[in-house]
Length: 240
Ligand SMILES: C[S@@+](CC[C@H](N)C(=O)[O-])C[C@H]1O[C@@H](n2cnc3c(N)ncnc32)[C@H](O)[C@@H]1O
Image (tube, rainbow, N blue to C red; front, side, top):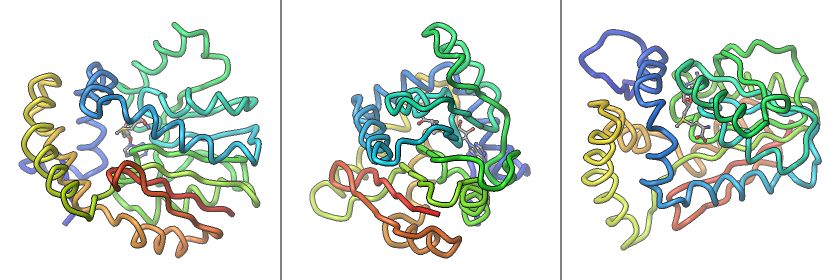
C-alpha cells in the first residue's frame, strides 16, 4: 500500500502529493531550512558538485518545487535549466523567487509529471531530483522516464532522505522525525498531514542498495551511492 498524506481521502498518491505541496508551498522553504538546521543547503551543494566534471549545458530538475536545486545547479554554468513539478503552488513560489533574483531567463519552471515527462528522448545532459523520488507514485516509472530523456553519456543525480542505521543516530533521528518534526511542521504549515507523511514516506522508501537496484533495473550504469550526515540523506548517481 502506497504511503499517502491524507489517509481518509480516495484520490491517488499523485493528486494527494500535489494537493499537499500546494497547501504548504508558502511555508516550504522556511520549514525546509529550519527543520534541517540548514543542512539541506549543504546536501544540495554536494549533490550538484558531482555533476561538475561533466560540464552539463542543458539540464532538467525534476520535482523542482520552489526551484532550490535548480538554483544551486546554476553554479555549473549551464545554458539553461528546466524545472518540472506537479504542484503549481510550489512553482508559483519558485517563479517569484527566480524573478526576484533575476534568474528567470536561465531557469524555466513548467508543469510536468515525472512519470510522463513532456520531452523527447535523449534531451538533457544532466538530470537532478532532490527530495522528489520518494513522492513518486510509481518509482520505477519515474526513474525510467528520467533515463529516457537523458542523453547517452549523461548523468542523473538523485538526492533523497534515507534511514540512519547506526546507534545513536538511528534513535535520535527517529525521535526527531516522529515527535518533533510533525509537531513543528503542522504548527507552521497548518497542514494536518504533511509532516506526518514526511517520516512515513521516508520509512517506506527503498533507500541505499535497494534504491541502487531499482536505478540499475531501469538502465542506469556506473551507479554510485554517497551517504550524507550519518545516513540521514543519500545521493545516488547514475549514467546513461
Ligand atoms: C520535497 S519537495 C522538493 C522540492 C525541491 N526539489 C527541493 O529540493 O526543495 C518534492 C516535490 O516533488 C514534487 N513531485 C511529487 N511527485 C511528482 C511527480 N510525479 N512529478 C513531478 N513532481 C513531483 C512535489 O510537487 C514537490 O514540489
